[in-house]
Length: 319
Image (cartoon, rainbow, N blue to C red; front, side):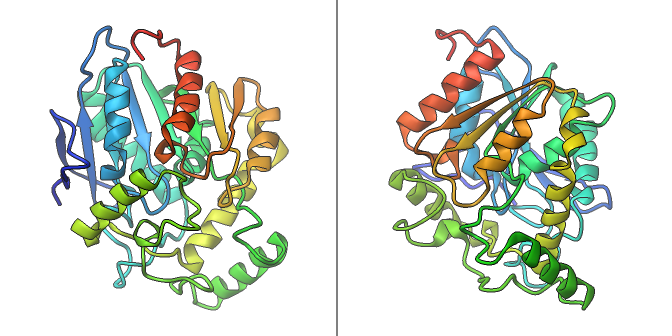
């Protein structure tokens, strides 16, 4: 599907969009842009969180292009404008996060390396941060650095009302019994972006929340409901791998990890714990931010961009 443009969320100029074939041939949607300002600094490769879509990042794309970066982004399999994995397209499903790993390889080889200037820097949110960390220990990484916004290393206790160990046990049991395609308990088809602003866990910025809701209203096919048992089992397995003490020591790509101070979706404590084990990494807490730091109020976003610019050496004039 084409990129969806709204008056409050226009497609940044110069977009090149289309599809590339995932590792198994599944059509996955992408978009890329050239930088709008010199000096040219390379390419930021954006990686979304669970349930997100390219249109949600138009403002971020503009922020990055003004800093001299080209930008490339794709919708993960099973969400956005990419191929869905179940007959009920509202369910967020995956059997194993290794499928995402293999799609990144295709994305880099088919879209980024041929058409986007190096060096390559990854900017990833939530589930995207989890997947990028899986790739940060692979020899010969494409990325010079990675910046991770509220990376999903463990789920917040606010979202899991029973002990995590017990939740993992039940998820594994249900998956083994063939219930992988069921919604998680209490799951629903309505995207988080389409819910009420009051009490939401994503952002404290009502205008940006309304903007994202308007995108989903204009293009319902972009929305995604709750995850399945299969997704949750895959997430728990990936989190467990990343949080093993020896994993962080194997990371060779310099990292900046930004935790949201008021996050109720992923564990900020797990991000701090992981950061303390890194050989090459920095950790910042964005005070008062809910989970989606890049969708937050201007003053909160400004703190993130200040850390981003300092980490990558972007001058104040360029920013």
